[in-house]
Image (cartoon, rainbow, N blue to C red):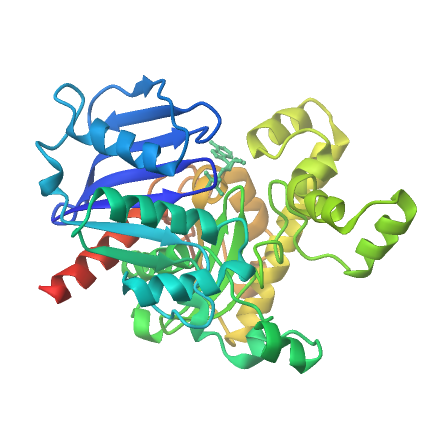
Length: 399
Ligand code: ADP
């Protein structure tokens, strides 16, 4: 089956056409600056990347541009749209309603709309992408794959905030967690690579990208994760603060005469390692600055490493042990120094990194010594493949 995977944001749309039998991408691409001017970067597998300046006034135009690129006689990869068997959409928030991926119908769309309040920046954009695809590919089955679904197995003790209960009842304020597709894919794959029985294992996944989260996966089910009602909670990220004392919001607001909106922007866009260092949200820049003697850059990475190590410790406690700690996403896959520094805090758990094994980028590997009591691994995430797998499975069930 050929599955088109769509990840639609407010001004961008990422896509991959994946062959579900070979599990390889046939083409990948990205529409940027939708509603501003427009640009399509399209890469057919094994061929040169193509940058097309396109007028993309809205998401319908972006989806149309993607379909044209896929079927183009020059840089296309399929003869006609009839070759696309199904579309898998990434949807950020599925609330409590969606515990797994589903085939999209009118009821599902309504339920996703009802979660808009919980993810006002993301869900409306995801819905626009779904609408545009339904319009331009009528009759093609579509699936929604939720970032929150994998974490719906969290027990109440892990998802409940210590707030008046009425706010959970009225507004469903609780912890949901995100990056679920990644945590699910990576934990399952880590069990295979480490030779563990997934249904009887304790795995901690560190998804360390620009957005970052940790999860505790017990016997193949997420039992805790660091992001909460929104992706702001938990680890320190590129530009997000992660956990802070909530009273800081009032404090800054009064001292600096800032509105709530300003402070939310500050916590989401101007904090994290970017805010602490004043240098960059990208660890490559931070490391270059630190090497050049920038103390703020050095401190920012240490605070990041320390917070991550503390979460790993708390999830080992939550599961009463751990078999494997897994690193994924941009930083987790590529940065051996950060991995080594995080593992440096985990000696008490029995994690012993092998420097040579850890000297890798972007490929699957066990990075601990043979006698390390707990294994650490690198497993590159592949959310698009996970979305394609779920979509193919759901669509096959329809036939
Ligand atoms: P997103 O959350 O946007 O999907 P990614 O998973 O792509 O983020 O991760 C992006 C981050 O990964 C970058 O900001 C950078 O900090 C880090 N990163 C990517 N490549 C490298 C590398 N080679 N060395 C160190 N850090 C890297």
